[in-house]
Image (tube, rainbow, N blue to C red; front, side, top):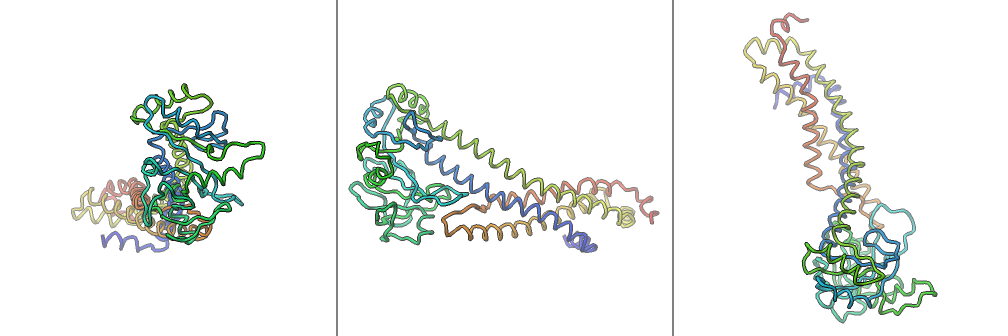
Length: 387
């Protein structure tokens, strides 16, 4: 390892410029990759959240997936539970925690009204880091996500003000890096009272029947699509969305986002790889006599090949480490700028760091293959005669 480093140090400026090309590409890959990791975390959290339930919205609602913009009546629950294959059905009432004043690159905080009775809380699949879960009989109580607790500086026992109501924080959820970090869970009755105030006066539904979504838990998850179809046939005026459709929509969005984001970064990294090729070709040209001498005293083609491949891999690895460090620093700065608004746009994961470093090292090695083969194939006699 000492000799390859010594060889790279022979032309310090050229090596530094080549490493800088890798650094720029890896920097872009790290920052955009961290954005993709955040989006993937949101998708994975939604996968866990909706994997075992059928979302039911009003048939005429303008909706995207499971998010409905029109209320659905809780009076339909008994009819839904009567459908063959349905174990239980619950109402959910969700709305923005606060008005959005400008564009945001993150999931907005939500106020989610639920009825914790009958095992409803357990079906959420969430764990509490401090305090307790919502319980039957709670009135003005709230369980908040980790991001809400951090940005609003709230702990168990503190008061949370939301939509003109005051709630006592009884629990703080474990961080999931998913959308639920921005949820405030409150008793359904409290959410219904708040939601009623947002509806036009021409709509006069009973407060206790308000929900934005109903959720049905199937007896057998493998039969969820068939159960959703039966619900749609038996209960008129609603649309039943099976988890497979929700997860497919999320998966498509994730694939598209990752391709666009990482594709842009890979272009920058590949440009850096071309600079490695140029540097190694020049290194071979400058060291022709040295290569000839090594082969004359017994160095094999494999030894010469390994020497130049290691040098190229070192350029990729050094550039990768510096690029990752610069990318992580930028991510921390950008996250710090948006932290006050409760927004985390980037997430740097061990998977991202390992993949980026491995890719930059492999890229350097691949870029060095042609120059290394050229060096290994040099005829020692011809090389020694060269000037």
